[in-house]
Length: 228
Image (cartoon, rainbow, N blue to C red; front, side):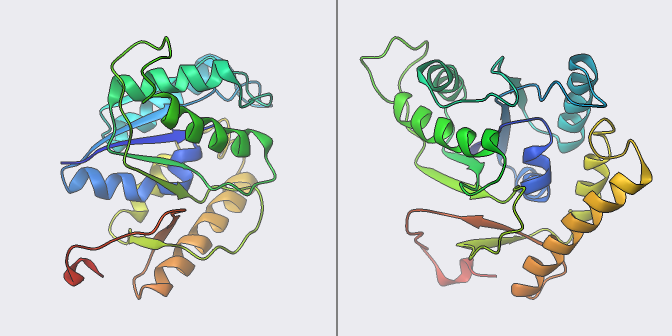
């Protein structure tokens, strides 16, 4: 069993970028946790209580072990000592083997700052001289998921086959009514975009749907049979 922490700047970011992968990882017996750096508010159709209910329902449907929401400011998320230490505290509490962060190129400043916060917090979590609650730990890997406001084309380090999980992933995204389903036009826009991305990356590995991931570090295999 591998312990995994997926970090998102806002509720719904993780589900949009790697919701199918989370469902598959849990099906395979791994332990998954989500950390939202902000509660995602304010937004035009949401409020803190609504967003909390939506994220909790999404967590229930995913089947994750825990979901933590920090009190960092939405739209003003910034990589500083406070945000690093609060994130490092969660890392020490959960003690993940692997972390997932947003892809580092994005039009949304909260997303790019969230990546920097997560990378720095991974390092902070291992430093013994810092006054952060919990025992030091250092997740062995960081992988980056695609959930960007830019229409970028990336070259994935690997792609997870989510053909069996895709339908449920889309059902979970519909839970976020304040963001995605407050109108039919909005849901058509969001769902068509995500389905198109997932079909494309699935086609690259000869499956129906896939989610791409990027690694800054080289990836090793113990057995060639690990390949799809």
